[in-house]
Image (cartoon, rainbow, N blue to C red):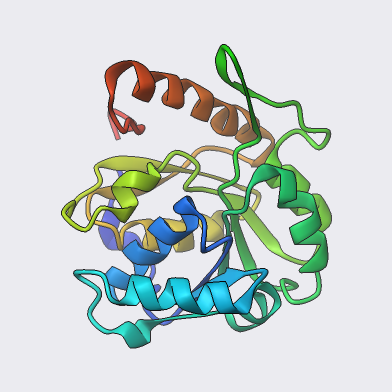
Length: 232
């Protein structure tokens, strides 16, 4: 069956929280969702930093109203949001999620963290005991509805107000097919993006690892490469 955006659910009433919302990826996603008019909560360990980041994003071109975006500490954001995107550095992934297990219970959790290392030869994928970052998230958050998505979206493209379309596919891995529609609906808020089901959580490790290849591509060709699935 061909991809059909008309079948996506209405996600306009969902509040999107971003844990790690003051980092490059988190800020970029927060900006794009706020620009689409979605209610966004920026989360950080420091509520003051989160509030400051939300105010800065709310003042960017294209955001219909600064009131669509606000900030708070991670626990506050995890408690108030319907869908929570995890965009923290890998080295803080386990500790951050462990501290949020209770407020994230019952919530849709979208993990976009890529476990990567860097040395003189460039980026490389790290071995994760659970198999992948999102599988670690599922282990640490047994009462949450967990999926992987937005792993390959360029932070500079997300943050650039002069760019209206970002033509790429967001690969979604999850055990719950219902989550595919929700996350695809959020992806579709960003012109040019499609959310594509890419298998169960056990298939996420190669998606996370492929980010190392994209970084190498971008360095070689001075680009902001993404992924587009053909024949769909």
